[in-house]
Length: 223
Ligand code: MG
Ligand code: ZN
Image (spheres, rainbow, N blue to C red):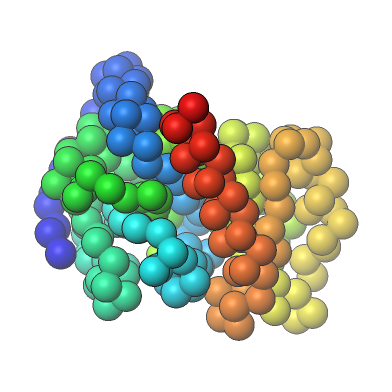
């Protein structure tokens, strides 16, 4: 595992670097997924579960973004997956420059999927294009119903939402109906996966979808 400290770029420079990343990822045929959420929503646990299912079927890589520590990267490292840690030294989001550098250091050139675990924050990660193909928001039932309407941008831009800690639903006031209604208004085309990182519930449906996306990409590349 490699761990480096990086400084954040400004938004304008970011757009140019994001375009460079996107064309590099396209050229390599790698599906890059930007996982965003608030702290404690379960991104790393979901990644561990996802790796358990997909490892052996697909070649995976993970870029971990964190303020100061490498705790999450260590967890991914234990799974035997190529992982690269970015420490933002206090910056509350990842940017395209960091991802370009991390990708070049991480890649063996033949990954099918690279997951980026963004810094836990529902605000500015949404504003920084990393050159990713898919944006996925993880939200847990314990965070309450108000999150989509309070942080509309991040939910509006996502291709998929993972509603985590679905096993805890009976112990919360979380309303699935209200959540679905809010999401339908903000982003009608977003896919919703109800999952539990703890029990593994729903993970198969999510990984089947990922396999489908990778397959489609490969067919596209061969045509
Ligand atoms: Mg984490
Ligand atoms: Zn930020």
